[in-house]
Length: 370
Ligand code: ATP
Ligand code: MG
Ligand code: MG
Image (cartoon, rainbow, N blue to C red; front, top):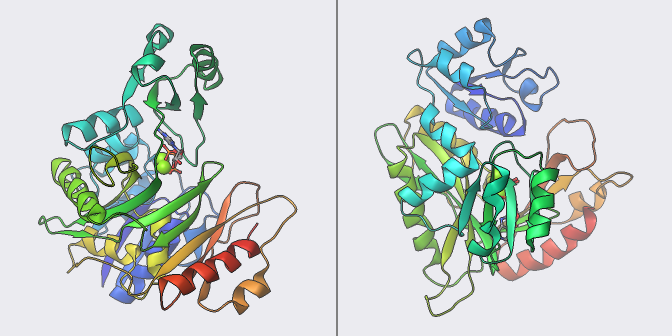
């Protein structure tokens, strides 16, 4: 029996643990919240991330991975030299800091939207013009689900947004008129083997992922471009484990068809990859477990067209569960979390024999989830 430690015990840890068990891997989770989703399917150490006893238990595992990037540096320092943490501390330091991440993407020769790092108010001067006159100001740290960012289209709005976000270090990005958003996960084993997940198309609502669809409806050659970029970043950053890249796909233009810009990188499985649980192939969760433990790993692709719709808490409204269960091809995944407005509480995966049937079923499913 092998043992995998996970920092964080949310729904991603829950689903990582569910994928690890059949591989004969026992999972130990360090997570302060006693009610966290992973409590039901992993050995749950309900203690702060810096708790010495909890960290000792993780250090006794074969390897440690994580399900969210904002793990305190002290926890990573305490594990250093005692157990491999995959992805490693250096990669994590980058991916939890937007400005550093964007700079490191440039160093790996991945394309991004134009951006300017803003650390103090005087740097706001002239910045918007430099990124194209319209942009999004994002805090460098702690933003997710569109929190910690503001759209701006004048210097006045930029100044207001900076104040509203608390005057903390930020990145100002040029606004991208993308055709669609896609994502792709890449895994790399400690001995350097690389494998890819599917290219998935993503639709956001109010800054939160609403729907993911496979296959993505993209121009020919887009997936190869995404893989090339993902491989370059994985190798340049020395990835061990799995990470997911979010891309903007640009409209076709003189620069060619389907150009991609990297939006951001998550050093782990990603909400857009949940559809791999029910597409018939290996799931992203199994892929992360395999990559982190150096087990055999090939590209993990769904065998059927599939989609996912997030169940996000809406005050006073519930999904129509009976209708969802009755709809052919659906599978419900719940996270055992208390209902709160705007909180991700679960998702519904959907499979179909062909793309057209998927589209029709997805239209039905979307109506059943507020
Ligand atoms: P996540 O939950 O994915 O971590 P986040 O809070 O880190 O979200 P981003 O992924 O940077 O935020 O942005 C959220 C969404 O806002 C994007 O998926 C995209 O729809 C939109 N967006 C972000 N940056 C830009 C941009 N430069 N131009 C146009 N739209 C953007
Ligand atoms: Mg993010
Ligand atoms: Mg994002």
